[in-house]
Length: 338
Figure: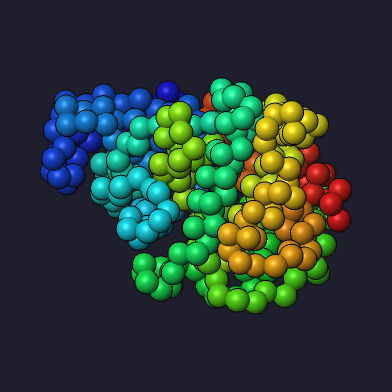
C-alpha cells in the first residue's frame, strides 16, 4: 500500500466500535486494487466485513473526492429500487485517519471488469446487460424530491455547467498541451442541446465494473462509486456507458471496440439505447454525438487529474500514471465524433 494511504488501524478500530452499531474488533485492513480517486478498503472485523472509502491525502482539487456526498446519496437511495450498499457512518473528523471517510456494508457478489463478460456463457450475457440497463433506468426514475435529494445539484443547464466544471478541473491539473482537448473545450459549449424536463439523479461513472452482481445471476446487488453523482441530464449516464464500450478491449477501462458483439452475445449500442428509451418511455435521442463527445472530454479531464495526483505522489492506484496517459487519446476520440 502507498505509504501516504496508511493509517493507525487500532485507532480506527476504537473509533468504529464507538460509532458503528454492532462493530467489534480486532480488525484487519486491505486496500482494494481498483479505484483511481477515493481509496477504498476492505475491513475484516470480528463483527463482519465492511468497506471504507476515504479522501486521498494531500492537496485536493476543489469539490473533488466528496465522500460526504457519496454517503448522502447512499443513505437517500436505501429504500428505492436502486440497489446500493448500506451507509453506516460518515466521519468528518480528519484526525482519525487523516481525511474524511465513510463506512458502508460489504456486499457479496461479482464485479465484471471486462464488458465482454468472458466468465459467462454467450447465451447468458444478454441478461446481465438487461439487468444493468434496467438498473440505470430505475436510477433515473428516482423521485429526487421524495428521497430528499432535491438540492443535490443545481437545476438546468447541466451540460453547460459540467463543461465549465471539467474545463476548470482540467486546467487545474494540466501538465501537457493536447490540441484535441482544446478543440473540445471550444466546440462543446457552442453545441449544447436545449435541455427540457426535470433533472434526474445522475451517477456520473456508470460502467459495468461499478456494479456488483449476484454471483451467477443477472441481478445487480449494488451500484458503487457515487463520487461524481449529482442532479442533471440522465443522458449523460447513458452516453458515458456507451462511450466506455467504445474504448479498446485492453487498458485500464476495458471496452468492446473492434469486437464482434453478436458473437459475444452482448448488445449493440443501438439496442442498448433503444432498451433504455423504452424502459423510460422516451423517444429518439437527438444529438447523440454531442453526448458521446462530452463523455470523452470529461473522462479525459478525469484522466488528467489522475496523472497530476500520480505526479504529486498521492494517487490511490499504482497504475495511475498509465491512466493519466490516456487523456490525450480520449480527447482525440471525442474530436472524431464532432
